[in-house]
Image 1 (cartoon, rainbow, N blue to C red):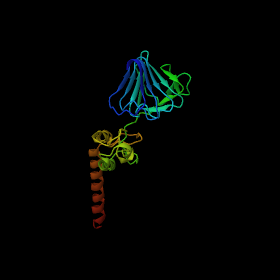
Image 2 (image 1 turned 180 degrees about the horizontal axis):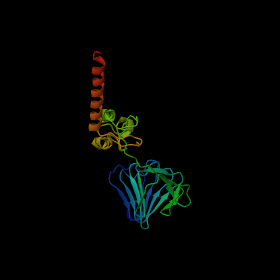
Image 3 (image 1 turned 90 degrees about the vertical axis):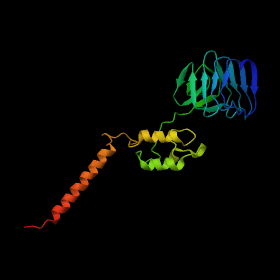
Image 4 (image 1 turned 60 degrees about the vertical axis):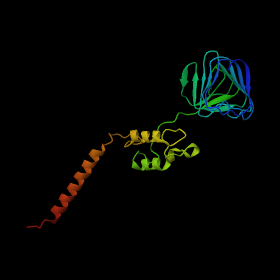
Amino acid sequence: VDGGTTILTGANTYSGGTTVEGGTLTVSGALATLGAGDVTVTGGTLSISSGVTNAIANTAALSISGTGIVNLGTGINDLIHGLSLGGVALTNAGTYGSLASSATFKNAFFAGLGVVNLASTAVDDADFDADGDVDGADFLTWQRGLGLSGGAATLAAGNANGDTVIDGADLAVWRNQFGLSAVPAVGAVPEPTAVCMALTALVGLAASRSRASRRPSN
């Protein structure tokens, strides 16, 4: 949008981003959306009317800069995946809105009484069985969950990076974290070779003691 007024009242399914450079883009109607892509406002106004349930996709980022304004109607609480204000990417999860809103973080790039809700950034975690370490059992969990998507792609099913699908990217996280404890240990984690050598030494010591116990006494 680069001038004038455009009103969206229906569910839009386009996958590309939405950019407002001037004029006013109004999203109105319970099912009205801005598609699946990121939303960028560098000038003019993006206005999300009261009653809209999910104008910006939950997986999309909102960027506001220049003279851009996002006007959020009363009752709007739109979950977003990323937020940039004035060229600065924000990482604090919580609600953002105008100076007059009830948002945790208030900013002049917003108007109206509604808020956007910035989701917490997922932290890579390959401890799928939550037993405190990343090991072969977690690999088996990933293997069983490979290909799951949407709501089925949970951490417990093998989703290490918090996206919407269990795939090779989650295996890469498992590889990087293999052998690590979920809670930082006091000492270094031994290398697999060192563990094998230690086990071999213990077996040898046990065998030596067994032979010694069987020697006849003089």
